[in-house]
Length: 431
Ligand SMILES: Cc1ncc(COP(=O)(O)O)c(C=O)c1O
Image 1 (cartoon, protein in one colour):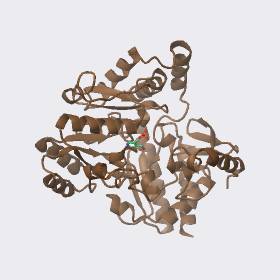
Image 2 (spheres, helix red, strand yellow):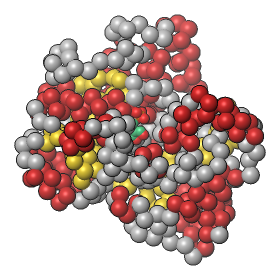
Image 3 (cartoon, helix red, strand yellow):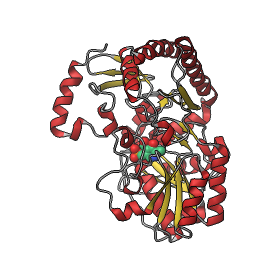
Image 4 (cartoon, protein in one colour):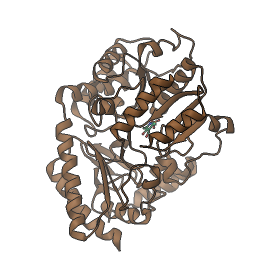
C-alpha cells in the first residue's frame, strides 16, 4: 500500500483555501474513499507522487496524454515557443492558421474552426452557434453524457456529476433546464419522440459519439446514422462532442471511425497535448455566423494562445506522422483479453466495454449500453478494486463512470503488470 503522508498533509492544507481541496470535483476520491494523491512529476506512462510513490497512469490527465507525459518532441516545441516566441499576444498569429488547416485535413466535418481554452467553452459556444443559426431554443442531449459544466448540460450529466450523485446541479435556472431535453443513449425512438413533441423548436442534438463519462459506452452505428438522418430531415444541427474521443479512437475521431459526419464538432483534451485548449468547428456555412463575420458572439482573451497551441499542434503532428492507432488498439485489446481471462479464472462475468484505447470494466453483468444499465454497477466493488489497483501502483480514474485510457508509450511489460494487478484486485473486490 503506498504511503501517503505528504499527500494527506497537503490535502488538509488545500482544504483551507480550495473547496474540497481540489480544482475539479472528481479528483477528490469522494466515491472511492481515501486520500487523493498529490502528484509531483509525470514522465511517459508514469507519475510520481509527493511521497515518492510511482504509478502507471491510466488517467492521462483525463484524456490528453495519448502520447504519455513530457513527450520529448512536445517539450522541445514548448521550450522553443517559451524562449523564442512568447506566451501571449492577443493578436492573430501564424500558428493559429497552421492548427486550423491541420484540423480541416484530419477531422472529416471541419471546414472552419475556432480555438478556445477548454472543452466546456467549446460545447457552450457550439450550442450558442446552433441556437443562433437555427433561431430555435431547445437542445437534446443524452442521459449520462457529459459536455462540460455549462448550465445547459448539467441535467442528467455524467462524469463527476454522476460520480458525486448530483447529475442535476442547483444553480441552473428552470428556464435553462427547460430548454435541455434528455434522450436515452442508443435509443433512436426516445430522440424521435422528443423531436416530435418539440417540432420546430430543437436547435441541436449534442452527443458523445463514444460515451466516455458513464464509463465507456460505444454508440451503435445505426443509432448515430439515425440521428444524422433525423437532423438532416428536421433542420437540427448535429453536434458530435469529441472532446474525449476526438484524436483518441482514430485520428479523425469517432466521426472517422463510424463514417458519420456531424454538422459541428467540439474538441478538447488531446488537442491541447496537456495544455488548456478546446475548439469547435464544422460546416463553413454555419461557422460563418460567428462574430466578427456573423452576429453570434464568441470570444476569448487567451484563445489561440501560442504556448497552448504549440503543445496541441505538436501532438496532432506526431499522431498524424506516427499513426500510433493500430498499436494502441493492440495494447488496449491485450488488456481487455487479459482482464477477461482473469475473470474466467475467478468465475466472474463483469462487462468490459472498449473502443480503441478507451476502455471500462463495469462491475455489473448487465450489458452496458446507456445510463440506466451503467448505473447497475456495484460501486462498492469498484471502490475496492480501485484501491487494490492503486496499492499495486496502477492509477485508474477514481470513479466507475470514467474511462481507462491506454497510452502509446505503455510497454508490453506495463500491460503485463496491469493484467497481473487486475487479477489480485478482482479478488479484493469480491471480499
Ligand atoms: C465529452 C466531454 N465534453 C466536454 C468536456 C469538458 O471539457 P473541459 O473539462 O476541458 O471543460 C469533457 C470533460 O471531461 C468531456 O469528456
